[in-house]
Length: 304
Image (cartoon, rainbow, N blue to C red; front, side):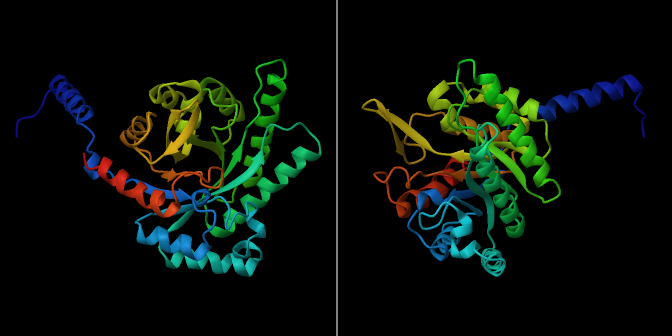
């Protein structure tokens, strides 16, 4: 066999690397993990949620309340250790996964009673997630003023996330801050995450929460935040009569598929979780319609 000289080997390897790098992404081979938030079906029982997820080819569910109760520990399914174990088995028997617990905990509060209440709630969700073999809990930043209070609020958010990250250490649960409320500019979020610098703290990228306010291109957002993104919220909307109106995926004017494609092409292994905000917007389509439509649209998108 003819031996390659070192220079020829390097040249061949370089060309092969270039060829490999330019191979187009094959959407047809990508199998997106799909979940939906129970925010979209506020009147369904837990059994109905599980059955619907299975029959509509979802891989998981994101629990943001059951039967309009947002404090999950008040729901019968999670009200005792025995009930939690039973609920976990029900989910496992259906061969799906609880992928995220959506808490209402806010990180912006200064030291005091309100901060303690929110931190305690987040810690209870971490404990519950561990028992359910759920990888994530979601928390909110929410308030992020432009005035002189910003430095103090930034400090509050950073230290709260660090405390929760330390609490979650060793549990198999990560604490994810959603891009939400007033904290929706990628540069501000990046600065906070760099300051937090904790392996058990990351982000839920709610694409539309950010874009509807900032109009930042998803490519710019992703470039800054990609290493922190573990979970996503997917939805679509239009602006009509001076306000936002939620519509079925693909029927709106947001660059949502641009964000989905960026994630997919760059090896995202998390869930694309459909957040149909039916609890907050009762006028939008029924869950039987919207939650059934989402996996169909996503699968069609990845066939292109």
